[in-house]
Amino acid sequence: MTTQRTAHRRPGADLGRVTGGTSFGGLLRAEWVKFRSVRGWVIGMILAALLMAFIGVFAAANSSIGCQINGGPPKSGKACLPQIPHGPGGEVVSDSFYFVHQPLTGNGSITARVTSLTGEHANLTGGPVQVGSGYMVPGLASWAKAGIIIKQSTHQGSAYAAVMVTGSNGVRMEDNYTADSAGMPGNVAAAHPRWLRLTRSGDRITGYDSADGTHWTQVSTVQLTGLPATVQVGMFATSPNYTLTQNSFGGTTDNGGPAQATGVFDHVTWPGAALGGTWTGTAVGGGGPVGQTRAQAQGQGQGQAGFGHSHGTFTVTGSGDIAPVTPGPGSRYPTVTIEQSLAGAFLGLIAIVVVAAMFFTAEYRRGLIRTTLAATPRRGAVLAAKALVIGAVAFVTGLIASVISVAVGVPKEQNQGQVLLTVSALTEARVIVGTAAVLAVAAVFAVALGAVLRRSAAAVTVAVVTVVLPFLLAGLNIVPSGVGAWLLRLTPTAGLAIQQSIPRYPQVTSVLSPVRGYYPLSPYAGFAVLCLWAAAALGLALVLLRRRDA
Image (cartoon, rainbow, N blue to C red; front, side, top):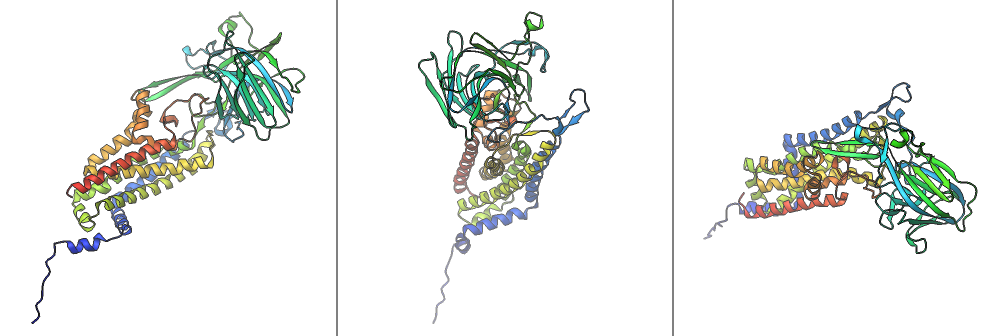
């Protein structure tokens, strides 16, 4: 007689055995099917892409400039732009200064002592001042410059190396517009002069400074590739425009006008150099004196010439700057950066975090999370699958929208008369791909919040408050600038720094504001902060998923 025995099994054991062994690839496919089967989520991602592209192109279409030159017919767009100089690296530059020079053939050096650096700027008390109107009042810009320079030619954008005194940044050596090295600190005065020296050996230029003309310190050595046999060498002076930036609730107001600097040089020597002839004064890029002082306007003095030479002493007055052009109030041109075409990413970000948060909370709301976790007891794997799916969808959405925004928006802005601040191909790729990566990581952060909070309204609110609100508080000056800077350092909003394409050059005054394209952290450091927030949220979500009942 055969006895049939019945095995008693725990309910759900077979289901757990079958699905518990499901591969992670199977989990990913299951979560992808969940996502694409909900029409609202798909529409939300499409809406995010459309918002990004539309806002970027719309902003570009409404950025046109207009002008009327010397009473002529009205013009618009590119017709209003002057010739835009570009430096040896292809960047848009400001190359405007007064240059007292002679040709130098072959190797040699030039030495000069600077005994004074003074400045004047437009009187802004009566409102905006244009070049040629208003009075010049005493005042020296922090990056006013006077020094000696070796320059390929007097053409704007040509290669150069210079060592100089500045308004409040000590001695500096700069070359080819973007490089800057610090020398002796302190301001120049008759009692505390600064001796400067440049030497040329082929393509290598070395700069030195000294307090007494006897003990010299090397500031830096630079390589100017392709420097011709004959270059221009001499003294220069320049000063960037004087600008007052006032932060107010909801925005920023800029008020600016021209400025100029005057440097006094003596002990100008050139041992071993083939210098000869007379000194020539050239206002490179129109960088000569720009206005009258109040005393001159009242008939108590003559308008300044670009330079004077008497008994071995040179007085040189110039305006403008020798530096890369950057976004902000000090720019000489109506500039645009590549990331400005991605302004719509901010609205796209909101739509994506809403969808991402609901990707997890919807299962709690409908009670489907029990089925999911019963079919796949590995709760960490479920969380990882959801995070990867929503992150990948957000990345693809952001990448497509970013490419369209830049491809359509940037050429349109250029046609409208905006000057694109060019960047390298790698930087352009970092901005575009980085924008998509920010959206992806923000989506992962939001889905983790959904797992932690379980309710859509709570998860969406926390995601928007932590990711979006700090940008608004800092960008619209709702909080003091110091507080805003810390918000941009410590909150997930820091990730948007990945979009910054133009570096904060030390020799250019820039306003720290996300609206102007500048963040307190470097692009990758800011992105790392966002990643840390997402990782922390995922870690907390994993702990709570394992401890709490579905």
